[in-house]
Image (cartoon, rainbow, N blue to C red; front, side, top):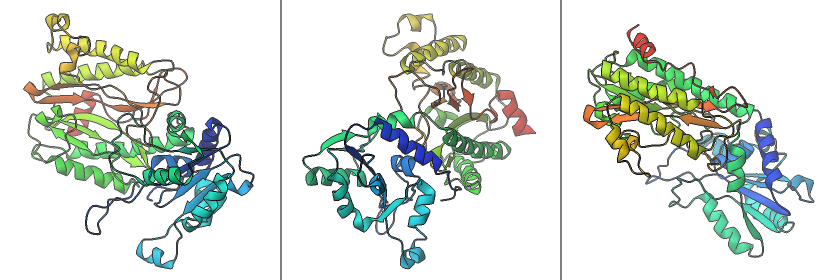
Amino acid sequence: MKYTRIDKELFISNRKNFVKKMEGSALAVFNSNDIYPISADSTMPFQQHRDIFYLSGVDQEESILVISPNSKNEAHKEVLFLKETNEHIAVWEGEKLTKEAAFETSGIKTVYWLSQFDTIFKQMMCEVDKVYLNTNEHLRANTEVETREDRFIKKLKNDYLSHQVMRSAPIMHQIRSIKSPIEIELMKKACSITKLGVERLLKFVKPGVFEYEIEAELIHEFVKNRSKGFAYTPIVASGANACVLHYIENNCECKDGEVILLDVGAEYANYASDLTRAIPVNGKFTDRQKAVYNSVLHVKKEAEKLLVPGTLMVEYHKEVGKLMEAELLKLKLIDSTDIKNQKADWPAYKKYFMHGTSHFIGLDTHDVGLWNEPIQAGMVFTCEPGIYIPEEKLGIRLEDDLLVQKSGGPLNLMADIPIEADEIEDLMNG
């Protein structure tokens, strides 16, 4: 890992919060992700399953966490099973966690090698009636690929037919949605690395550069500052490309007079940042571009004020829609006839602003959370309104990451990253 070691108190506290939500005589199991193959002997870079990381801090493959709070064996209340390290592995793959290092990382005292799992786990299962299994229940999850967790669940259900199966996901969605002070600091670090990338770009961008060159500048700055790189596939979209919401080709020349939509963010210690800015290729917005830009910025500033405890996300998005409708009328992109003839399920403003305004962010860019319950202090959301005008080859989206506070409105974790149109122009031309 490139990041510095995280205080293990984070993971100790996270496990305590999970245990509080468990029911009766039960244990819970969390598996690491696989290393996914490409072809031949090639693999994708390893990415740890966010849930086992959240509960243990373990950031390597072939790891299992078992939590059994009511175990009669004190040593088995929390157990890590890890891939056994040796000199051969250290030479070919690099050092893996030793039992001592695993404790320093996680705060878990009992660590076994993975080869002991079946024997120890059988002993633990004999003490409980229920087992919490961890399935991917994110609203937008694609679950076609069978994971290590999926294979484990299949085997467990076959081997332990008499145990009642419980779901870990509802608990994880609840506790992961509230960020602790340590998590907030990690997210601030990811945002600060993103800021360095943006500052680098404002001095680099000019007519004739290619989108992929901008991507390269960002990855250089991110990795230089202890990030693995992008928290998600970067969008560097110039001109008409900005009207494609998930444009990721990043292969076009940036031309004089165009605006570049940059949806990019660094990760740090597996925590995501998510930022969007729109910058003029030549360092100067046209009057029309600036008018659209300032309309988006106005909607964003007003939307942020709604990210307070008690707000329901469904009502929040309706209010943002009203804000956007007023701006689109001002820009003469829609008129009163469009509003009169709009459909309830597709308002007139959706022609130019067709996506949601906010999503949870944390260990995942589109983090897990409670969508149908009121917002609570400690939650972190993006705020990202946009206006997309294909006929003008112009797309503007502006996005920051915001921590909901008990009072006083949200804390913008990206407040020191330039966003005012005039400030961006000044920095590009300074």
